[in-house]
Length: 142
Image (tube, rainbow, N blue to C red):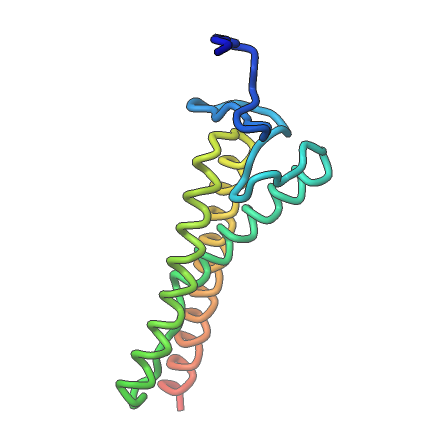
């Protein structure tokens, strides 16, 4: 039986294995969500960054939706809320797994996506509040 300690041997059972990082690092050679993705190329890495950015942005936008109107059937309203919750929690868990790749670019894309999504949702809320304020001030003048 051949006893080989081989610290530089990265094969096990005939399959190539990659070293898993346990601290933040900066490299296009990351594994994000799926084995073999983003395929060690700059283009695929940029695509992974954009995917994580938009996933975080959508998760943040969904967290501030939906607005249920008064008089909505409770079962319909509950189903709508539950549907948004399923998508939101799925996106958040996918983001958590992506950030657990410890790749600094992925981390920055997730934080930037959450920040931009928060910004958009608050801009929308402020615009909605201003519109309601204007419509209530017009009705008071009449």
